[in-house]
Structure formats: C-alpha cells, structure tokens
Length: 367
Ligand SMILES: *Cc1c(COP(=O)(O)O)cnc(C)c1O
Image (cartoon, rainbow, N blue to C red; front, side, top):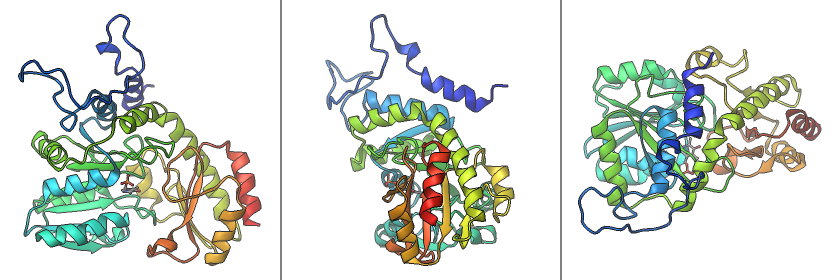
C-alpha cells in the first residue's frame, strides 16, 4: 500500500518535471545570480537575490511537499528559529522554551529577546505535560529534545496552548517531516536545522520554517528579506541534492539505531540509555503514537568523562564531532559544552554504515 508519505517522497524526486522544456537540464541548475533581468517591475518571478532565487524555490518546493505546508528557507537552523520567534513575539509577550533543548535557542532568547522586552521562561521538556500556559504568546518545544531525548505529547501541548490563545512552534530537527509531523498535530510553525539529516553530508548549513497560516508565513518571509539572513545558492543546491536521498538514508539510519540501541541496552558498560524505540524507554508509548520512526539518535551514559572519551577515541567508525544526522556515525560527550547531562553522557548519531561493521567497532571500543 502506498502511504501519503511514500507519495510525497516520490513527488519530491520528480518535482521539477512539470517545469521542464525540451533540452532543459534534468538536474537543478545552481543559480548564483543576485540580480534578474527586469525590463519592467511588474510580475517578475525573481527580482533581486535577497527576495528570492530559483535555487531557493527548488529546495523550498521539495520541503513544501514533505511538510505539506508553505516553507521559507534560511541560512541555518538558528536563522529559521530566530525568524520564527521574531515573527511571532513582541515586547511584553511571554515565551516558554525547553530548558533541556538546543542551547543556542535559549541563549538567543536570553541575550536578544529578553532585551527587547519579551519575558522568557524555561521549563524542562517533561514539565510541559503539567505546565500552565496562561499568558503565553508562544509555546516553543523540541521533541525528542536535543540532547536528552525526552519526549512531549505535541497534540496535548497544542490543545492546552490553543485554549489560552498561545501559538505553538516545534523544533523538528531530530525527526524531520518524514518521522514526525507537528503541523498535522496542530502546531502553528515548524522550525528545523536542515544542516542535520536533510542536507545529510555535513557540508551545508541550512534551515527552514514551515507553516499553514499564510499571514504568519508572510511575516516569516518578510523577516528574511528585511533582516537579510538569506541562504547561499550553493547551500540551497546541496540541500536540494541531499533531500533526494533523505528517505533512504533515514531508513538505514533508524533501522541501524534500533539494532544498536537494543545491544547497548544489554551492555554492562552502559549505565543508562535513552532511545525512544526501546520498549523500556519511558517515552516509548508516546513515541509509537507520535512518530513514524524512532530516529537515529541514541543517548548513553558511560561511567565517567574519561571512559566516555576513551570509547569515542577507540571507535574507528564514530566521528568525534558536534552535530548529527550525517552519513557517518558520530558521537559527542555533551557535558563538554555544559549541557545539563552526566559527565559520561554521549549523544550518538547513527549513520549509514552497514550495521554489523559499525556494531563490531562499537562493541570492541566499549571493551
Ligand atoms: C543543530 C540544531 C539547531 C541549529 O541548527 P544550525 O543549522 O546549526 O543553526 C537547532 N535545533 C536543533 C534541535 C539542532 O540540533
């Protein structure tokens, strides 16, 4: 049976077809032009590179198919996140952010939004389940949270936020629209770092905002044009290429992560593990309801910082780098950045290596 998502993935691969004339290149031309032929000012599809370019339009068309929504692209995940917050908040408004989510979002809110008169409140992802959102203009959440991999029920938060007139913004970076669909669950805006799995090769910073409210999306688009935080042509082109294989890469990455998480959970060196696909994970039931895959991120806690760093050093198929979602597996001890996690906590991002080759290295490195 073809699912709606299968259909969207196939359409993504053929999205340029309807616009092709005889002899046109089949693959997307990279268009670095900042300026466009403009004999008069009426009705031109492109005017000037800060307003829009054919390369952005192509990647936005792909993302719009996946999100089933309007999409505005940005030069990074943070470009998208700051745009969504600037488009929805004014002086005197209150915003709730996850205290255990992506830390740069919190720093942006504290250092810039607070200074403009926005009241910023941070609560733990799991506390969203009981939080009272009265008086909030925006409820911002991230599930599974990065790096702790805690989950929160998006539909439940949306219902309670809506009842008090708040908008909901969801950072969907860890899942992508293929694995989790916050807009279908009622969220007003999705923000994401396409730097991660969608680009997928650790060679382009990129991000997007998606939404189904035309007025809100027009404000997001205005923010991009007026702030000047615009994507580069090369990055848009690379993400366009990356998105063509997102579905196959995610299938391999998620399947491997399930195998590896189950084995890590049994390993005596692993003191604690978070992976929403494990039946023993506290969020497993919610993950089954809310996500169409369990993702490729695994959180493990080893004895201490030395043991955790030693494991990464010995494991030949685990790149020691920050970020995640690339073709290669990578791992990082998050406490080195000051995240509120144990000293021996590692965030592992499972790549597309054949799973048994990867596991044999992980097992050997764990000792
Ligand atoms: C990486 C990341 C971001 C920021 O993306 P950049 O492209 O680095 O700006 C935002 N949210 C989450 C959850 C991320 O993992």
